[in-house]
Image (cartoon, rainbow, N blue to C red; front, side):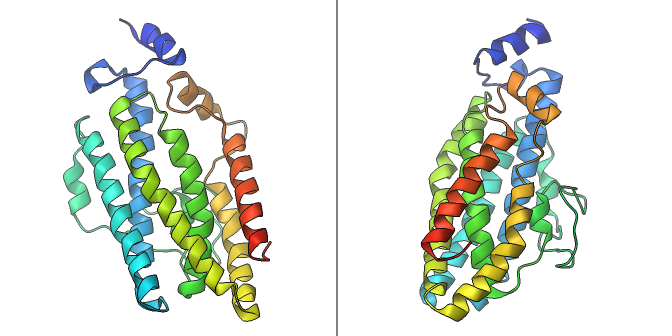
Length: 250
Protein backbone atom coordinates (compact mmCIF):
# COMPACT_ATOMS: atom_id res chain seq x y z
CA UNK A 1 0.00 0.00 0.00
CA UNK A 2 1.54 3.34 -1.03
CA UNK A 3 1.35 6.60 0.90
CA UNK A 4 -1.46 7.97 -1.25
CA UNK A 5 -3.58 4.91 -0.63
CA UNK A 6 -3.00 5.27 3.10
CA UNK A 7 -3.86 8.97 2.92
CA UNK A 8 -7.12 8.21 1.15
CA UNK A 9 -7.88 5.55 3.75
CA UNK A 10 -7.22 8.02 6.56
CA UNK A 11 -9.21 10.79 4.87
CA UNK A 12 -12.23 8.48 4.88
CA UNK A 13 -11.97 7.81 8.60
CA UNK A 14 -9.49 4.95 8.60
CA UNK A 15 -7.45 4.15 11.69
CA UNK A 16 -3.85 3.04 12.19
CA UNK A 17 -2.64 0.96 15.12
CA UNK A 18 1.06 0.32 14.59
CA UNK A 19 4.15 2.39 13.70
CA UNK A 20 4.83 -0.15 10.95
CA UNK A 21 1.81 1.12 8.97
CA UNK A 22 2.56 4.82 9.30
CA UNK A 23 3.82 6.85 6.29
CA UNK A 24 6.71 9.29 6.90
CA UNK A 25 4.72 12.55 6.72
CA UNK A 26 2.04 11.18 9.01
CA UNK A 27 4.72 10.06 11.46
CA UNK A 28 6.24 13.53 11.52
CA UNK A 29 2.93 15.28 12.16
CA UNK A 30 1.90 12.74 14.80
CA UNK A 31 5.18 13.11 16.67
CA UNK A 32 4.88 16.89 16.50
CA UNK A 33 1.39 16.72 18.04
CA UNK A 34 2.57 14.40 20.80
CA UNK A 35 5.70 16.42 21.58
CA UNK A 36 3.69 19.62 21.91
CA UNK A 37 1.27 17.94 24.30
CA UNK A 38 3.99 16.30 26.41
CA UNK A 39 6.06 19.47 26.68
CA UNK A 40 3.00 21.56 27.51
CA UNK A 41 1.91 19.15 30.26
CA UNK A 42 5.39 19.09 31.79
CA UNK A 43 5.67 22.88 31.65
CA UNK A 44 2.19 23.27 33.14
CA UNK A 45 3.00 20.83 35.92
CA UNK A 46 6.29 22.55 36.74
CA UNK A 47 4.80 26.03 36.66
CA UNK A 48 1.84 25.16 38.84
CA UNK A 49 4.06 23.37 41.37
CA UNK A 50 5.43 26.74 42.42
CA UNK A 51 1.96 27.88 43.49
CA UNK A 52 1.16 24.99 45.83
CA UNK A 53 2.50 26.87 48.85
CA UNK A 54 0.45 29.93 47.84
CA UNK A 55 -2.78 27.95 48.09
CA UNK A 56 -5.16 29.08 50.85
CA UNK A 57 -6.09 26.04 52.90
CA UNK A 58 -5.53 22.30 52.78
CA UNK A 59 -8.13 21.53 50.09
CA UNK A 60 -6.63 24.07 47.74
CA UNK A 61 -3.14 22.66 48.32
CA UNK A 62 -4.39 19.16 47.60
CA UNK A 63 -6.10 20.35 44.41
CA UNK A 64 -2.94 22.07 43.23
CA UNK A 65 -0.77 19.08 44.04
CA UNK A 66 -3.18 16.78 42.22
CA UNK A 67 -2.98 18.89 39.08
CA UNK A 68 0.83 18.93 39.25
CA UNK A 69 1.05 15.16 39.62
CA UNK A 70 -1.57 14.20 37.06
CA UNK A 71 -0.26 16.48 34.33
CA UNK A 72 3.17 14.86 34.69
CA UNK A 73 1.47 11.46 34.52
CA UNK A 74 -0.37 12.45 31.33
CA UNK A 75 2.91 13.46 29.75
CA UNK A 76 4.41 10.09 30.68
CA UNK A 77 1.50 8.22 29.06
CA UNK A 78 1.92 10.01 25.75
CA UNK A 79 5.70 9.57 25.97
CA UNK A 80 5.11 5.82 26.03
CA UNK A 81 3.37 6.09 22.65
CA UNK A 82 6.25 8.20 21.31
CA UNK A 83 8.67 5.48 22.44
CA UNK A 84 6.94 3.02 20.10
CA UNK A 85 8.18 5.20 17.23
CA UNK A 86 11.77 4.94 18.40
CA UNK A 87 11.88 8.35 20.05
CA UNK A 88 14.61 8.58 22.66
CA UNK A 89 12.43 9.38 25.64
CA UNK A 90 15.42 9.13 27.99
CA UNK A 91 16.15 12.79 27.29
CA UNK A 92 13.00 13.60 29.26
CA UNK A 93 14.70 12.09 32.29
CA UNK A 94 17.41 14.76 32.11
CA UNK A 95 17.00 18.11 33.80
CA UNK A 96 15.13 20.56 31.57
CA UNK A 97 13.95 24.00 32.72
CA UNK A 98 10.24 23.22 32.49
CA UNK A 99 9.54 25.86 35.13
CA UNK A 100 11.45 28.56 33.19
CA UNK A 101 9.32 31.53 32.19
CA UNK A 102 9.77 34.74 30.23
CA UNK A 103 9.09 38.16 31.76
CA UNK A 104 5.40 38.69 32.36
CA UNK A 105 5.29 41.61 29.92
CA UNK A 106 6.78 39.55 27.07
CA UNK A 107 4.68 39.22 23.92
CA UNK A 108 5.73 36.17 21.90
CA UNK A 109 2.49 35.33 20.12
CA UNK A 110 2.48 31.64 19.22
CA UNK A 111 6.24 31.34 18.74
CA UNK A 112 8.09 28.39 20.29
CA UNK A 113 10.81 29.31 22.77
CA UNK A 114 13.56 27.71 24.81
CA UNK A 115 14.20 24.52 22.88
CA UNK A 116 10.97 22.66 23.63
CA UNK A 117 7.52 22.36 22.07
CA UNK A 118 5.28 23.73 24.83
CA UNK A 119 2.42 26.02 23.86
CA UNK A 120 3.42 29.66 24.14
CA UNK A 121 1.04 30.26 27.06
CA UNK A 122 3.32 28.12 29.25
CA UNK A 123 6.20 30.55 28.76
CA UNK A 124 4.43 33.21 30.85
CA UNK A 125 4.83 33.28 34.65
CA UNK A 126 2.10 32.90 37.21
CA UNK A 127 1.74 35.71 39.73
CA UNK A 128 0.34 34.28 42.93
CA UNK A 129 -2.62 32.07 43.75
CA UNK A 130 -5.46 34.10 42.22
CA UNK A 131 -3.51 34.45 39.00
CA UNK A 132 -2.84 30.70 38.93
CA UNK A 133 -6.53 29.91 39.43
CA UNK A 134 -7.59 32.33 36.69
CA UNK A 135 -5.06 30.85 34.29
CA UNK A 136 -6.15 27.31 35.17
CA UNK A 137 -9.79 28.15 34.56
CA UNK A 138 -9.09 29.50 31.08
CA UNK A 139 -6.44 26.98 30.04
CA UNK A 140 -8.37 24.14 31.65
CA UNK A 141 -11.38 24.92 29.47
CA UNK A 142 -9.10 25.03 26.44
CA UNK A 143 -7.50 21.70 27.36
CA UNK A 144 -10.89 19.99 27.61
CA UNK A 145 -11.80 21.12 24.09
CA UNK A 146 -8.40 20.28 22.62
CA UNK A 147 -8.24 16.83 24.21
CA UNK A 148 -11.74 16.05 22.95
CA UNK A 149 -10.35 16.76 19.47
CA UNK A 150 -7.21 14.68 20.09
CA UNK A 151 -9.28 11.75 21.36
CA UNK A 152 -10.47 11.28 17.75
CA UNK A 153 -7.01 11.02 16.16
CA UNK A 154 -6.57 8.26 13.63
CA UNK A 155 -3.65 6.67 15.49
CA UNK A 156 -5.62 4.44 17.82
CA UNK A 157 -3.09 3.89 20.64
CA UNK A 158 -2.81 7.67 21.08
CA UNK A 159 -6.56 8.19 20.85
CA UNK A 160 -7.01 5.66 23.65
CA UNK A 161 -4.55 7.55 25.86
CA UNK A 162 -6.37 10.83 25.28
CA UNK A 163 -9.73 9.24 26.03
CA UNK A 164 -8.31 7.89 29.29
CA UNK A 165 -6.91 11.21 30.48
CA UNK A 166 -9.84 13.37 29.31
CA UNK A 167 -11.86 12.93 32.54
CA UNK A 168 -8.89 13.94 34.68
CA UNK A 169 -8.21 17.04 32.58
CA UNK A 170 -11.88 17.83 32.94
CA UNK A 171 -11.52 17.53 36.71
CA UNK A 172 -8.56 19.94 36.62
CA UNK A 173 -10.79 22.50 34.91
CA UNK A 174 -13.50 21.85 37.50
CA UNK A 175 -11.04 22.40 40.35
CA UNK A 176 -10.15 25.74 38.79
CA UNK A 177 -13.79 26.76 38.64
CA UNK A 178 -14.27 25.79 42.28
CA UNK A 179 -11.29 27.93 43.24
CA UNK A 180 -12.54 30.87 41.20
CA UNK A 181 -15.95 30.63 42.84
CA UNK A 182 -14.35 31.09 46.25
CA UNK A 183 -12.20 33.98 45.05
CA UNK A 184 -15.15 35.74 43.42
CA UNK A 185 -17.12 35.83 46.67
CA UNK A 186 -15.50 39.16 47.55
CA UNK A 187 -15.22 42.35 45.57
CA UNK A 188 -11.45 42.44 46.03
CA UNK A 189 -11.18 38.84 44.86
CA UNK A 190 -13.23 39.56 41.74
CA UNK A 191 -11.09 42.58 40.93
CA UNK A 192 -7.88 40.56 41.20
CA UNK A 193 -9.36 37.69 39.21
CA UNK A 194 -10.56 40.07 36.48
CA UNK A 195 -7.07 41.53 36.09
CA UNK A 196 -5.65 38.03 35.69
CA UNK A 197 -8.34 36.98 33.25
CA UNK A 198 -7.62 40.05 31.15
CA UNK A 199 -3.96 39.02 31.10
CA UNK A 200 -4.40 35.32 30.36
CA UNK A 201 -7.36 35.21 28.01
CA UNK A 202 -5.57 36.38 24.82
CA UNK A 203 -2.57 34.19 25.63
CA UNK A 204 -4.70 31.08 26.05
CA UNK A 205 -6.62 31.90 22.86
CA UNK A 206 -3.36 31.98 20.90
CA UNK A 207 -2.87 28.30 21.70
CA UNK A 208 -5.68 27.32 19.35
CA UNK A 209 -3.59 28.41 16.37
CA UNK A 210 -4.40 30.70 13.45
CA UNK A 211 -7.61 30.68 11.46
CA UNK A 212 -7.33 29.23 7.97
CA UNK A 213 -4.31 27.13 8.93
CA UNK A 214 -2.64 25.30 6.04
CA UNK A 215 -1.32 22.71 8.50
CA UNK A 216 -4.87 21.92 9.62
CA UNK A 217 -5.73 20.71 6.13
CA UNK A 218 -2.78 18.32 6.21
CA UNK A 219 -3.75 17.05 9.64
CA UNK A 220 -7.37 16.67 8.58
CA UNK A 221 -6.40 14.49 5.62
CA UNK A 222 -4.41 12.29 7.98
CA UNK A 223 -7.26 12.07 10.48
CA UNK A 224 -5.13 13.80 13.14
CA UNK A 225 -7.53 16.74 13.32
CA UNK A 226 -11.23 17.03 12.52
CA UNK A 227 -12.37 20.55 13.40
CA UNK A 228 -10.52 23.74 12.40
CA UNK A 229 -8.79 26.04 14.86
CA UNK A 230 -11.45 28.72 14.58
CA UNK A 231 -14.23 26.24 15.49
CA UNK A 232 -12.37 25.11 18.62
CA UNK A 233 -11.66 28.72 19.55
CA UNK A 234 -15.34 29.62 19.12
CA UNK A 235 -16.35 26.78 21.44
CA UNK A 236 -13.83 27.91 24.04
CA UNK A 237 -14.99 31.52 23.79
CA UNK A 238 -18.61 30.50 24.34
CA UNK A 239 -17.71 28.27 27.30
CA UNK A 240 -15.55 30.87 29.01
CA UNK A 241 -18.03 33.70 28.38
CA UNK A 242 -20.76 31.73 30.12
CA UNK A 243 -18.47 30.62 32.94
CA UNK A 244 -17.21 34.12 33.69
CA UNK A 245 -20.72 35.55 33.70
CA UNK A 246 -21.57 33.13 36.50
CA UNK A 247 -18.88 34.84 38.61
CA UNK A 248 -19.74 38.40 37.55
CA UNK A 249 -16.55 38.54 35.48
CA UNK A 250 -15.98 39.36 31.84
